[in-house]
Image (cartoon, rainbow, N blue to C red; front, side, top):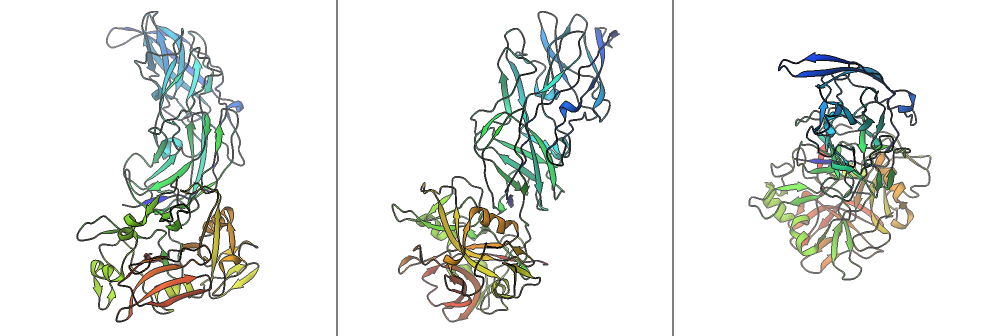
Length: 565
């Protein structure tokens, strides 16, 4: 299984006051099949312009959907309960009729709420005479429930006998536009980092419909909302959606959006992410945009994996998978221990996940000979395809400009790339240093990572982002801010971080701040005990570099997948 992490440079957060116009009702007697005298009311309701909010060019209208039901509190003076309208909304419009039926001897009392599912018939806290009001928000939605211009935003109305209903919204509303959803995605997850957004809530008495509100609290068990197509293990089937999700009011420090390729579980293949803080209320919102990077960004005929190859435990025979995202080599400034961390600009995990060298060596760093043995040999080389590799991915070849790595890095672009208003022909890459604003695993205020950016064919790089492109570029020549780095990712460019390597002879290599290198295995043997690898440093790029002591060296692996540009 694979899971897909979403890049989120921006989102739309909408928190509004939503109100339905006052309505009229009428009573008439009715005899049920059981012989119990019943009261039936035909209720008409409408929502005026005060319930509609325009943000940019998008207007969530909050119109009724046919079949919408309202839970109506009734009481006979001693017994209290909620009953659900027996006939839901009659029209998908701002005006609709409802039918509510309850036993004679009872009368409408306390509150009515929408949707009916947020209270239970046996609720003891119904919001009247000193009681709080207990409501439950769902933790999952289908696309049909939340997409487009409608929303299941919870609302409350005073429910006095003989009077109409006048509804007010209980939450803010998260209006999220998600673009470029990968075709394999089966569920979206929105993580609110320990803030409760679903489950049971209590609105403290006295409950006043016009001011009642559901507020968030610290609760890591109820901080993720999921969205599926229809509750089954089916792909979402949409490349772009607008979803409207009820959101309890309060302050949220950060948000992460992910997409998975399974109804439950799943692993990651795409991971760029960004978090932000915001405050949700009933009166105001913040405009953002949410976009996924393409899951099939081709570089001269190949897609390059975002993550690196990892060995799954000590199973025999060995199996392999791809990590969730870019693995950035860094060094603990206190102890000197070496870790791979996942920075905010490359992976949504916060705080950064780190791995000590002793536990990561055999999991993320591999000897060429061990890979050849476990993945199967193809003559003297590593077999490019293997059932031990993630489906569709293959081990890259090296050793010449025509190899996988050669075409990806050194091949001529198939469509024009523009940098600083000039056309780039061959060598469409740049060595960069990226300063990310978020703190790292060691509480350092700013993280600076180094690596290589391969430019997407057909892309136009904003002026001033890259000053030197090609073989002689230097790290210092291309410093990037977090915003610039994320912009390049959105353009479909590929970031390959420095990796360093480990040697049985001299330990970790190339970690100094002034001289960091990338070493990525290829499947190709050059000669006896001499192995090609893709290598870059601050003044050189090579896909034919030979490593002559690979029985002592541990390096990382990126996989490739043939795709159509």
